[in-house]
Length: 305
Image 1 (cartoon, rainbow, N blue to C red):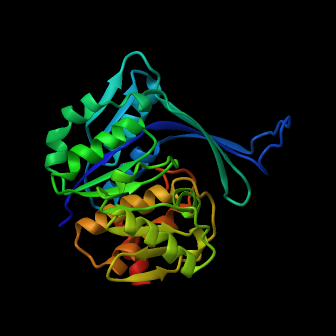
Image 2: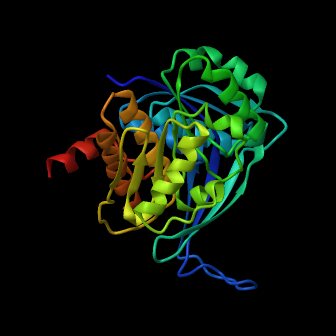
């Protein structure tokens, strides 16, 4: 049975343009297709975790506008508890403009909006949900002072805190010891550690940086190469599954949501990482972030093949 998961993070409306290539300075491109999707790293992770079987509570902030309402509807559709998604009457909901080229690569511009207004007071107002959760998943797409407050206020409650350090922001030294699992990608890891990852050996060196700072477990996502795990007892690389890439937007969020679910089901670390890789692999074969998040039945289908 899955444990309760509290996801604390951002909510955006994604404006998605499919183009042949990314525009050069001064260049105007005609979009091959345009779509709108509910997004935001926090919301993406909450929906991914819920679809994969997690009992998910989401803590976020939106504006009192149509964009925010669309995001709420998407959360409810995927059975995410959104009772603690607060509304800010004076600030618009977050928006992301996403360009996707023919290779499935993306380029993103974000206007945080109400995400920057998720406050310490909002976390205090949500403490009952956090108290009742075994796992807390958080990213850096909300106000950094709020992230720091969460780490300080939640750590003593003996929760397993997963920090996805994206978008990248330098961490203060004391923060590392509060983290049960950190999940940077290659570029985020390099920015935080100063170690460029070229192979398993350099991934291990980067992981050691986090472990020496006090993090208990490290997963570094390596894109098409898979994911590297290390703690004080073991280390290994789980290769990625080969698949035709349609859109990589939100793949990392699906990976993190899947990690939270698998961690709550007390699988061993290899099973946890494999589960997350399968989930994110399914997602890159579809368009959108939340719309591409797989259901548990899709995972079971692949496992039977």
